[in-house]
Image (cartoon, rainbow over all chains, first blue to last red):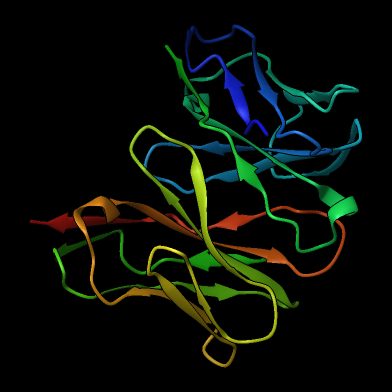
Length: 116
Length: 115
């Protein structure tokens, strides 16, 4: 059973550009959540996808968008990058509703994004 | 909405000494509680969780946490720390029951174990 993987591991962009981050869920997991962890802070919830549909969103502007594919892998897209978008972006997968409300989220290693 | 406060941003402790990392939460609904650990340049790993039942929960590597509903706390303890416990620890809450699995995290506590 493979764990959660994310790509790329590091990324440097300039202000105004667009970025796509990718996440492969743990085998059998149908729910993916994305979090932003700024330096020195705890992770903040961006949004969650369950079976290809958005199932909850945190306090992030619309330029943060996502996709979940039939194989349950996921993408996080950020348009019009700002300096404050520099952070570690974490993806977490779980069995979601199929596993019951107690289901644990398993985190990937993250993608570190630097916006210059 | 839920919120989490981790009262100490950094905790230095000597090897083999006991440690307590404090976590308080605020919520108007029932919650599940979690502790995650983050080693340098890595993602988050689940350390332990409280869902229901016994208020004392334990991890496989000697950590334990006790849910105290009246004090809205979920402090993490270990009786004797090792160098390998050096990491950042995050307390998190999630609304109990089905639906959104959004975790709300505290700002973290950096545990430094001194040889």
